Length: 289
Length: 332
Image (cartoon, rainbow over all chains, first blue to last red; front, side, top):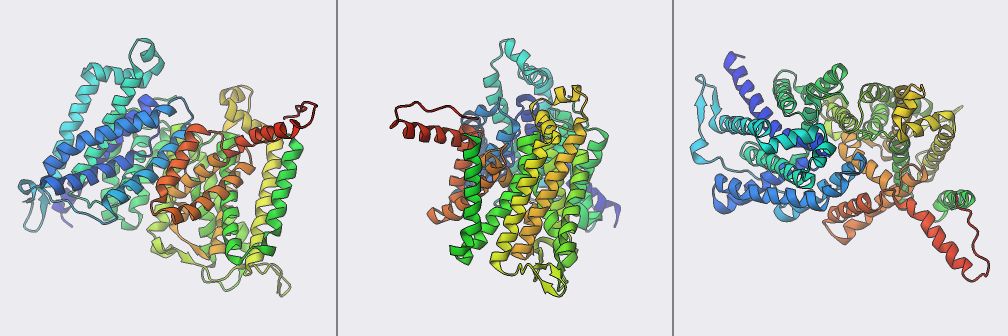
C-alpha cells in the first residue's frame, strides 16, 4: 500500500469526522445547556437524509432539496421541543431517555409510512460529480471534498456565533449556569427552543449532505446516534471544541480501523472511549462536576 | 394499600402462575416463559434504576453475555451440564459487569447513561463482527441443559412445562434474593445513595463500592436471564445486547413502576402482550407503542403500580359506602 492510499483514507476520515461533528455538536449543546439527553438526535439525521432524497426527487436538484428541507427540519425540531422535550427539563434523565427512545420508534414508523422500507440513493449534483486524480490509479471524489469544505465553513460559522454574538453569549452562559441566566432576565424557554431547533437542523443538514455518499435507508440514524454519543463523551458535554476533537478522533479511528484491523474496527472506537474515560472521566474538554 | 393485601395478591399471582400450565396450551406456556425471563431481566435493571439511582442504558450487554457464555462454550456439546453452564454464564456476566461498572460508576448523570450504552455497543459489535462467534447470524444450541443425578436427567428441560417451572423458580428466587438484600443494611445504603449521594458519602460510606456491588449483582441477574433466554430459544444472536433491548428494558421498568420488585414483572407482561397484540391492530403498531411509552413518561412517572393504592382506595370506598362505619385508614 502506498502513500496516496493513506491520503485517501485520511481524507475520508476527515470527511466522516466532520459529519459526526455536525451531529455531535448539536447533541453536546443540548446536554450542556439544556441538560437534555436526546436519543432521537439520530432520527433527525435520518429525517434529513430522507428529506433530501424526497425533495431532490421532486425538484430534481439536491440544492433545492436542502433549501426546502432545512425549514422543515427546523419546524420538526421546534414542534418536538414544544410538545415533548419541554415537559422534561425538570425531570430525571431517565424520563428523557424513555421519551426520546419512544420518539425513535415513532420516527422510524413515520419514515416507513411516508417513504417505505426501500434503500434509496441520491444523485450527486453534476458539477460536483467528478473526482480528482491523485496518482494513475487513485482518485478522490470531489463531492467528499465538498462535504469537508462545507463543514469547515459551518464549523467556523458556529464558533463565530458562539464566541462573538449575543446569542452565543447566552448559549455559553446557559451552559455554565442556567439559573443565573434566567435570573438575569433572559427567556430561557425561547433560548432552549432555539438551541434545540438549531441542533435538529444541524443533524438534519448532516444527513442531507451525507445522503449522496451513503445510501438512504431505514434505521440509518441509529448508527450515527450511538457513535455521536461516543464523540460527545470523549469531548466532554457542552464543549463544541471537545465535540470537534472527539469527532476527528473517532473519524480517524474508525476509518483506519476498517483498513488496518477490519475485524475489530467498530470495537476500537468504543475502546478508545473507555481509555479516555479512565484517564479523564469528564471527557477531554469537559468540566469536572 | 395494607402490606398484607399486597402479600396476598402477590401470592395469588404466584399461585396463578404455578397453576397456569395445567390449563394453558403450549404456545401460551412458551409466551409466558418469555415474559418471565424478560421480567427477571427488567427486575435486575430495577435494582440499578429504581433502588441505586443508576440509569444504565447498557444492561442488555449482560443479558447477552449470559446467553453467549452458554452458546460459545456448549455450541458443539451434546450434553450441556447445568451445573457447568449456569455458573459459567453467571460468572461471565458478573466479570463483565465488574469491569464495565468499575469504569462507568466513576461518572454520573448523563455520562453514566452514555457510557453504559457505549459499552453495550462495544460488546454488540464485538459479537456482530466476529465470524468465530457466529457474527450477526448468532449461534444455535440444539440441546437443553440437563441436570444429571447418576445417569438420570432430573429436570427434563426439553419439556416446555419443566422449562417454564425452571424459569419461574429462577424468577421467584431472584425476587426473594433481591428482597433480602434490600432489607439488609446494604439495601438501605443503596436506596440512600439514590436519595442523596453526597449525604451518604458524608456519612462515611464508600459510595462507589456500594454502587459497584449493586451493578455487579444486577449484571449477574441479567446474565441469568440471558442464560435462560438462550437455553429456552436455543438461539443466541447479537440482538440480545442491542441498545434496543436496553431501551425496552428501561421502558418495562418505568411502565411497571420502578422501585418495586413486582413493578418490572407487571411491566414485562404489559410490554410483551402489547407487542403481541398491537401488530394485529395495525402494521404501524410501533406508533401506538411509542405513544403509550411517551404517555407513561409524561403522565405516569411512577408506573402502573403507582395506580394500585388509588384503585385500592376506590375499592375500599365503594365497599364501605354500604356500611355505616367510616373506613379505617390502614394505608402503609
